[in-house]
Picture: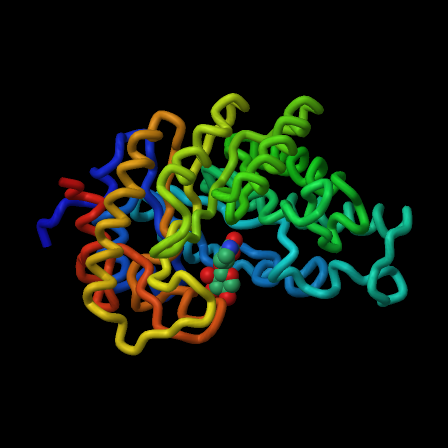
Length: 333
Ligand code: XIL
């Protein structure tokens, strides 16, 4: 295989990454990783339910394996994620009596103590390996008047879970860039809330280093100009930015399903990849990384989300061969 490495399609300072599960650290997936990428993100292995399923009992096998694989192969590691409303065990939000937490001062103290203990353990363990952490994930909800997602975290602690998370992460992982990560930041109202939250946190001295745009887009949405504004709108904040979970569904709505996916659609996807990545390259001065949420179409979360269906959102096909999307990135002519 002497096709160009994906990582060479971007300037040196832009790391190119892929999300992986443990089975992708061997065989043909590992070969692809080592040839095309600079960085890996654990697709699930560092989430709370994977690392601390029971209070105080940590399970490191999967995450350790991915980190060791990355270290042995000279790949960087993006940590994902310390605080999220999903994939967080139910015990985290139970009060001292085992009931679902309600907003009281006691519960707030207990929840923040659990948050701190979790981050100390996880971010501390990988302090020498993880170059960037998604400290908090998906905290914005633009349908709320203040733009804050009504998660248990928010209901019990207000913004303090975010402040605490960043401060503890900085303390135990001083060399990692600390990110706030979210999806649909291409929606102007959503990214305005995110922008203003980051501005506020920085003004308070909360150590936020970066904004992560997940960028789960599709074949028709959003417009390329909106993708470009997604980056330029944050430039004034003086934070790093990365694309953290890129993929491009072949569907532009949540209920369609093709079997098989028409070949013309993959060609169309290739042209759209070309246009989107041309925009990202134009903004490369403002980016430090672009991570794809997966390697090849053989394993993509989009075959389960939002419904079970075939989807082919990545640069490599189900046999890990380069497809039009790949050529759209590396050969934009
Ligand atoms: C997804 C994983 O890829 C799936 O395997 C899992 O079942 C659900 O989570 N936004 C995120 C990621 O921040 O953590 C999600 O990952 C995809 C959406």
